[in-house]
Each structure stands twice: as C-alpha cells, then as structure tokens.
Amino acid sequence: MRGEFDLIRKYFYQRQKNRDDVHLGLGDDCAIVKAPHDARLVISTDTLVEGTHFIAGTNPAWIAHKALASNLSDLAAMGGTPAWCSLALTLPEVHEPWLQSFSDAFFRLADEYGIQLIGGDTTKGPLSISITVHGFVPEEIALTRAGAAVDDWVYVTGYLGDSKAGLELILSELPNSELNKKVLEKRHYLSEPKVLAGQALLGVASSAIDISDGLISDIRHILEASGVGISIDVSQLPVSGELLEYLNDDLALTRQYALSSGEEYELCFTVPETKKYLLEGISAQSDTRFTCIGQVNSVNQIVLHDQGQPLSWTLSGYDHFKVNQ
Image 1 (spheres, helix red, strand yellow):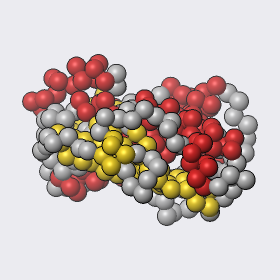
Image 2 (tube, rainbow, N blue to C red):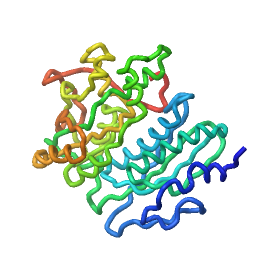
Image 3 (cartoon, helix red, strand yellow):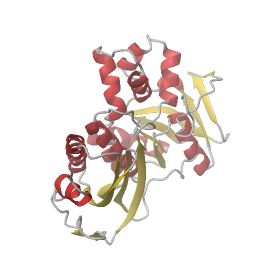
Image 4 (spheres, rainbow, N blue to C red):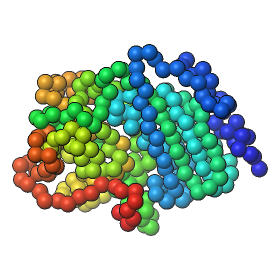
C-alpha cells in the first residue's frame, strides 16, 4: 500500500507548470510565492464533506470539480484573479482509481483558471476535501457585499434553480434516465465559476456575492452589509427549460426553486443606473448571461413581487446544519 508521500508524489506532484510568481511549490514545509506590488490578496476556504455536500459513490471527478469550483466562485464574487491553492484531502482508505479520477479533474479545472496547487495535506478519516484559494485584486477596487445604494439595479448571472432540482434527482431512488434529468444532475456538481464576469465587473458593480446558500439567503448579506432593502420581481428570475420541464411548467414553484436553490455558484450583484450601459459589453466579453431581477431601496428588507403584485412566500436557502432540507 502506498504511503502518504507516495500518493502526493504520484497524483499531485509536478502536475502543473510553475507560475512565475511561485518560487517554491509542493515538496517543502511551506510554499514561497510573490504577490504583485500593486495588488491585494483575496483568500477563501471551503470544505466538502461526504454525506453533506455529496453522497457516497459520487463520481470523484465531479467531487473534485465541485470542490475547486466552489472556491473559485468566492474569488469571482470579489473580482479576483486566481493564483494559488492548497488542498487538504481526508480519505477513509487509499483507492487509486478514485485518486486518479479526482486529481485529473482537479488539475483540469485548475489549469483552466490558471490556479496552481502549492501545498496541502493528506490524512485518513471520513472523506472530506478542504481547499484554500488565493487570488489578486487591484488595490482599492475589490467587489464586496457592502456598497449597494438606493436605486441600484440587482442582477444575477446564468440560470437559477437547477442545482436544487439536480440534488433532488441525485437523492431520489428512482432511475433518472431522461436527458433533461441527467443535465440537472450535472449542473449540481459541474457549475462553472463566473471568474471572468467578476473581474469585468470591477469598478462597475457596487456590490456582489456568489450564490452558494440560495439567492434569498445570500442577497440578505448584501442587504445587511450595505444597509439597504431590495425588491425582487420573481417574474424576471432566469430559469432553464430543463427546470421548467422537471417541475411540470409550474411557474410559481420554479421561481421558488430559483430563489432557494443552494450551490448554484452564480453571481448576484448591484449596479448603479449610471453604469448599466456597460453591462451589455461585459456580458459579451465574459460570455455570461446577466439578468436584472430587481432594485435596491431603503426599506431594509427583501420584498418579493410578481410584476408589482406582492407575494407572501416564506422561503429559506441551504443551511448545512439543518437536516431533511
């Protein structure tokens, strides 16, 4: 049986070309890196645990993608440029085909976004993956949750709700052979972090956050950090044809999924009226769909309506400490 260092050497060592700013990567007690003099570091850590974020037997390539994508999404929400990451991998046992698939997918996504693995740890225990990512933002203009002002417009990227539907299908005991259902399952695990969109929104968006716990939960962080209220027109929520078909064209239920679906890893951001004209070009530049779903106000709460008709829906997002969600 291979030991810890043999596993690191085979599956993680020298899998990537060294970035110019990495002076010493894997293979020592610490990595040595150099940040640009005119930038600030942005750092985030996320952990995925079997039974909470994925079920036993999940494709290891999908787990690797989800683990890294969720961290990259945090960088995207700040407008960050990915640079380095570390990986702590806890395994119940050594299963080399699992490790091969996991590491191949991890480095495939890492190379796509130019982020280099520079350190980490492996240990024995219940399956979990912890990743810390580091990136750069220009001095003074990082996107944050604070900054939204009254009359700013509220936007989201992509489509919402697919991840919740995908998770339901994954947990279902029924066979999911239909193409649309397979698409929804993949969207739960294989989201694409909106890194280019986040970078392009620097200096344009007044606030931003990534949608990891559900729009209805995450947008509250903007509300609280900025000291504002937000009005959302549910008729404008972007939803996919696959989600509509899955929910039998029930528009109200589809919109509720869009509001409450966790682990979407899309962006929610606010933009002043004076900068709205820039969004069409940014959308094209980053190949990202932007949809305006509402407006910032001063009432210090979230108001849901359907083209002006008030709604009294009681919704919550994803909470890792609640069961049977």
